[in-house]
Length: 458
Ligand SMILES: [Mg+2]
Image 1 (cartoon, rainbow, N blue to C red):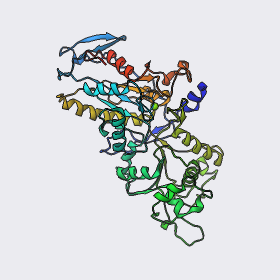
Image 2: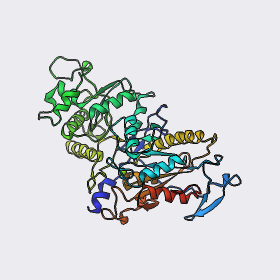
Image 3: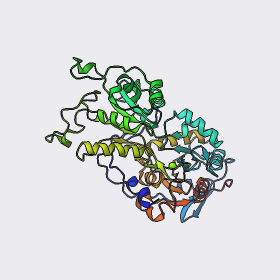
Image 4: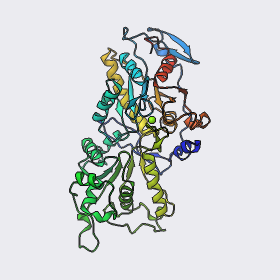
């Protein structure tokens, strides 16, 4: 595959504006989503944090120099007074698994970290299953005990949107994905009370999509009655009695692109999100953005920007980013080139890394508390192990931790990136990892050496 297919448009990062500055844990509250069509200053060069272990000198262990970096040495779990000030974040697809098959070395690496009380989280752009189900499945496939406490998937941060002053808990939202019914159940578990799927609308009003639906059997089996009818001009129906969608969520990769794009674009063109309406502001040159998305239309959220991902096939496959590109392309054609206002989370966006760091910090405290560290100290470094330069690596490189934690990017050769497809020349700027290693096990070994680990060998 040509380099441009891997690193071209897929690496074009939408400009973003963080809507809020904090990312609380799921049990806490805040909006955190970013707007993919508004401007965010490109991340400044990330400051490095080396030799920051001086506060530990004089206790146990000592300082050594590894890879040109001063590193703390640690004893093993037999001396629980020392808490490792580092942790790991692993991508899943292409790093730990190829679809359902463990990548050699990955289970051993996770088991080693578990056995040695070195905290880690799984940080994936995947989704479509509830966190509990996904963790159970991963634990079985990898043969390693995992919990939802150290697991963040693409749509996990959506759960925050049911809280706070702008809560969507009682609003009506539209969700879609590979299995929209499963996405609805996840959303309901997050706390959203009124969740509509494309199936609900199609079964109530088949005329919205004048073709034979590809997923008709699925739609028939999963559709629920609409909470309100859709607006029909000339029927005498009051607009306030019609179905109004307040937000749209793409949880993971949709399957029926044609119908989903139709429905999403309908709502982007609607009056205040009322299904079946068309805003009179659309195309009005006197208004900002010629009136497009200027009439209270529902915000559109994507959970994952990955254009490509690594699967069992020998070439990368389209991910949710391809669906987003299709929606954006249709929108541009309809609006004579106007950019679609949308909100994107997941790697590489800093909001997801910020969320992940908070999850990891809480998980680390719990792991170390169980080991006897009542004051685990500052988390100095997180090693982000990923296979995708545009998401895993760029995200770690860009992220500016409020806690001052260094996010060190490690690229593995087991996934979507390979020298044959993209080449190391393409790994420039924010896409350049700190190091390239063969697999997850080598990534852990490299990090342990960098940290001066003197415990058991992996
Ligand atoms: Mg991956």
